[in-house]
Amino acid sequence: MLQLDMTGYYDEELGRNMGIVGDFTDPELTELLRLVVDEYTDESTGRLETTCAYACSGKPFCYNLLMSRPFVLEESWI
Image (cartoon, rainbow, N blue to C red; front, side):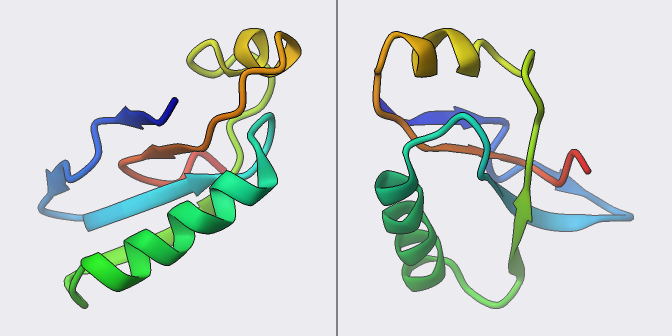
């Protein structure tokens, strides 16, 4: 399962970013997601490494049930 949370959202101050969430996610799928983002987005879209802590978007629930997934959102939560 791939979770996309407001991906591609544009903010005049922040620009367009894709935050790759690294906690409570599958490391191999997250690395694949990094490769996909780098390959298929242009230089106007930045890639950020971020975390979202335990309660973010139901991630721990899926993680604890051993559901492999990467997660990308519109910006950094750090």
